[in-house]
Length: 487
Image (cartoon, rainbow, N blue to C red; front, side, top):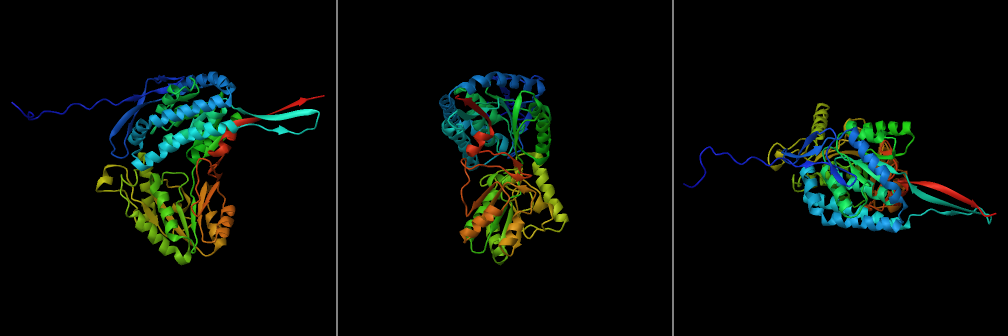
């Protein structure tokens, strides 16, 4: 007899994979024995299980890091650079697996994943290269003395990274911290931990000494808090919400240790009537298309000179309405954030605001299967409304009109945040004047590139400290002065 018997059941699904901590060069199960599930935001289907860390796991990881960093720091910069190059090579060779791990937990598109994986590798290559130029300076105190400075590591760094760009933002912190001679205990988001754990394994296999890169997975209260408070952790780097950043700044302040905080933004893109309007509109649309607006530096406030406001906004809307969920942009990564974006839409509707496009989740077609939100534009939003002031962290753009340069500058700076900004103007001198007047850590004029080489960090509630560029190396090092009497 052939065929399938009536009532036959399909084979049971394979059990989910478990991802352990990575501590002292090995996979380590959680001390408490607990794991928690993940799920795909693109399909809402269950995924792998992640080790649920506790303070006991943090203790083990910090002890390993504390034992490992002195020998690493004592090695010549050229040797550390060679190891980081090997880590970059291993990441490049393992890009396919890193991509699939990120895809499973973030649902990102192929193009977004390639961009982020490539940049993650590039962070290690860049800091391996510039490390050889990291040095102190001599200070002329006259013929009777020899004085100089050294840049020395802190020791153990606690790196707490977010869910929106998991591998990319982990690499952004880990590469310069390790380059200077530190050891790191990383705490990735519990929603998107797997690629960071895999990075640590690849680094060990590439020759990074055991204990220098440890990953403890788990929640903020169970892992992040104990990590920041640990007496052997001498610096903390955090990317995430203002609320959590304030808490960690208080912990660091009580302990008198430095902290780098990157806390998000409500960044402006300013468009003058004499600008290349098509390029400006493409940039404004691209800001909320990229990662579905789940980027701290996304320019989500579109400020346009009154005479061309409607034209620019129409071009943006036309571009956004061509985008396809799952092809041109990914889902909202966490369920809580998905609900938050929808709640912002509901509040806007109650306040009488009507979007020109979007303003809802997908209820049919491919986007309905996951946590996809329609790219959204609200025009002429009052400056006091939450949509104009608060970080939505989704594909939501709000617009305002300005009359002249002074008005544009005032609007751009009318924010508690100050992470990035973008200016588009046919008058380059005016563009640069505005860039110098905007209170933000990075400003692009007419699409000027902002890359790994350009330092990144915030003003005001967007935080402090700098990632990227040579400045990151200095942020992960402390300066020592040595003076010798020659008399």
